[in-house]
Image 1 (cartoon, one colour):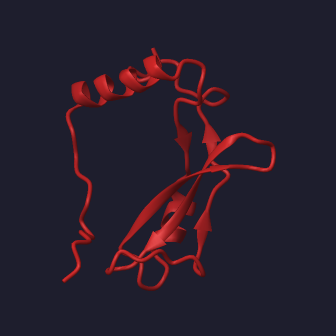
Image 2 (cartoon, rainbow, N blue to C red):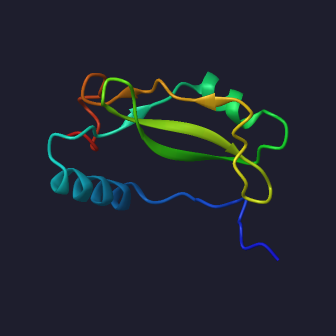
Image 3 (cartoon, rainbow, N blue to C red):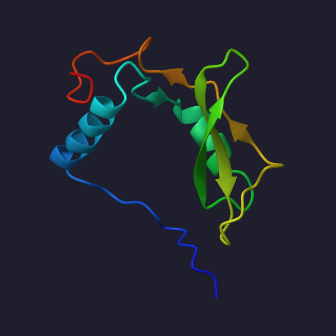
Length: 104
């Protein structure tokens, strides 16, 4: 029997989210704070056959910059590497919401 949960993840309170984000930013000052992916690429990865979710891998692009790679995941927890993949996010240092409680 698999221990993979296709419904992993859940909502958290704003105060908890801010605390977690601030802790990360305090430990890694000057690092990329976030990555933005548009709805289109997220839907592309999620709507491919057999996908029940997305796994996000840490990566380094050809310019030596940290990046994220989106990979669809099936009901058994297996990556769908031959399907639609996502990257080219907009890192938050160049594209940030300056009014967000996460970036202040």
